[in-house]
Image (cartoon, rainbow, N blue to C red; front, side, top):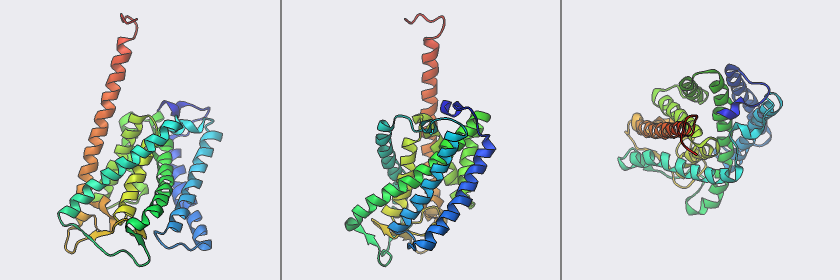
Length: 302
């Protein structure tokens, strides 16, 4: 979080949150409306993904402009140092994100909560859709990367400057759940815990590269590998497979119309992931403290 201290001016934590709210619920809604009026793209199609990516890229450009021209600090201080290594970390993050959300989805499917269903009319599915799905993954990465730039870059740095560390982490996760409009208990818990996990991963990796990949892999797997709703949005038009809640399966198991993020199984999985991330952060912090102590004044080290 030291990068957040750079620059001539500092955005107050509440102002950073307000800026993000205006960007998501103001600027993006206007952009989406304008794009939809001139380019009618079916829900979940490749064209719809392009529209979404464009709107998110505008949001990213606006927050970057704020950081550069108001706060007077480089873009890399948002969490994008070492871009060469960043590309590798993004790829690793995507694999982690796909694996993380696949665990609860496959558990739910194994116990009968999900069943295979026919794809929507006109959709691309199976092996023939692989090239298209790779293109969609890149577009999903733009969306997820922008969310991480706003949340774990801009907002987290502003809150960490002004508030105790634990409060900055919790407030960031709460804000993340609220802007996703996840107000039902299980969806809220899962997205809140994902927010905690994402903050801890950002701290552990000292940047946004890997957590952006995790976020992208998580969303892509739900929507375009398993064909289930992503945070309550309808299933995608193009997916490797299509799963849906089995008849009579309880909502607490499947997540219902919200998707697997509304499942108790997913909530437990992300809780475990957050605990593992917390352990890694505390271990790294303790190691740094020990190193500083051993090399500090009065040490016999050469």
